[in-house]
Image (cartoon, rainbow, N blue to C red; front, side, top):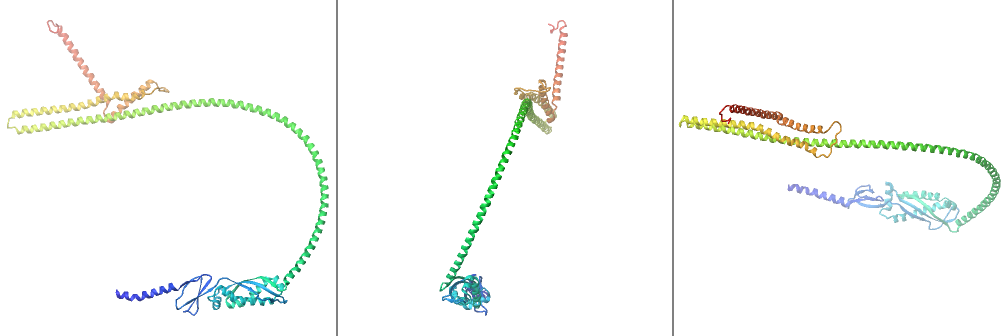
Length: 502
């Protein structure tokens, strides 16, 4: 492991050196400058607006300014023109280093690492010489009247020299042209006089034309005014005649309109009065119909409220009765179930005692058969008594149910009729009356008894009828016994010497 780490140390060292070289030699050229890196390669590497890496010690980097530069071109001494007039010219040229590779290569040989001011000073002499040559080929008038052509010729002449230096001329503008003897000013004065003369002549001719035009315009205006006044007078006369005719016609029409208006007003007044009377009659009829409709609606509303209250009260009473009946049914069933369970318990206890006595009787057989028979007979008698008691309790359970139902019926009837006693007034429509109300109460009670029959399986009507039939039969038997006893007593009393007769 150590050997591997030792073998990797040179690799790390080389990697660190490479990274350091990249970090130290990393350069980034702005768009207005060219970074020229030379050293290893035969051709230099040019960076414009991009980044690159320069190997320290082995490569060098030089800068070349590529921005626009202004060169002030002045003729320091008077230069004679083609017509031998000494002039001084002041011009300004805009130049830059050509962005083409060939132009950068030529400019790098002449302006490398120079500031823009130094470059413009180097170019100033060459441009001044070219402008002097062009001035000698032109006349004073050509220089002043066609300065664009003059500047184009200077650019064309100077471009040949500038291309050799890798410079591109963007523009050349003539700022000022002067001469030593003031000829340019005199030429301007002559032109001024000529212009003034021509202007005066033109002004006089214009004034004459204006006067002639004004006179002609006044004559035509006067004729037009007279003709217009004549036509106005004629038109006024015709207008007055037409107005008179129209007034006569208008007066007639007005009279007819007034008469027609009065007739129409009377007819409209009559129609309005008739319509008003009809509207009042219709309004009265409508109000009467509305009153009748309101009475009918109020009547139906009252009937609906009474019917709804009665239905709601009847439904509430029916639900309360059903709830009470259900409660009583469940209570009766519970009581009956308790009685049956008690009877069964008594029966099981009797059987257990009977069995115990039998076992005891068999265990004491040695005491004596007579005593065992007596004990057995006593046990059998007690068992039979318990059976009869259970049977009686079972029958008593049905009688208890009947008794509870009979006791509950008055309460059910009272609950059915009680809500009706709280009503102050009942208005019944149709064939209903007090007999119908009583019938509804009886029907409600009957529904309760039928609910007991369906819920508990106990026919209340049959039970009541059986109970009443039994009581009536018992009463008849008792009555027969009493009658027979009375007859026997009477027959015995008729015998002489009998104690009863006495």
